[in-house]
Image (tube, rainbow, N blue to C red; front, side, top):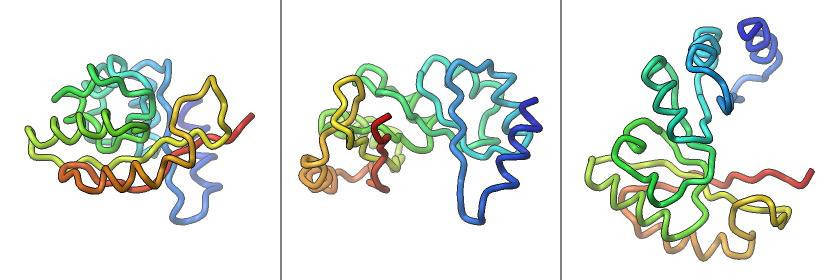
Amino acid sequence: MIKENVGEILAELPDGVEVVAAAKARQPEEVLEAVQAGIKIIGENYVKEAKEAYELVGKRAEWHFIGTLQKHNVRRKVLEIFDMIESVDSLEIAREIDRRCAQIGKIMPILIEVNSGREPQKSGMLPEGVEQLVGKISGLRNIKVMGLMTMGPR
């Protein structure tokens, strides 16, 4: 079923469009099946689940962290697994990522998470704070802001 679904989705996409397949609540074997079917980027919400799936899939896919990243989860192993963090919403988290990446000699691409719909149940910073945060982050040597990540209101 996964193979067929992935095949249909990928066939409909125009050139240059990349799929980030959210692995939320999926077993590592299902993640591997999606990668074998053509998925190139896995998005994971939870560090523990990412570690389990990564043990099976490894570098056959690119790994993006798409969940809320807490300071205590910014550890060496996490930064070694993920190729991008799509949910940076504070200078505190950015500084911790920068500090830990300096220790392992890595420059981490990040996206700033923006709560564009101003929804209290969603994480992310408010739009008016983005420019100031990006300005402060630009001085950090081991992270690189690649863009914004947002989910519009339902």
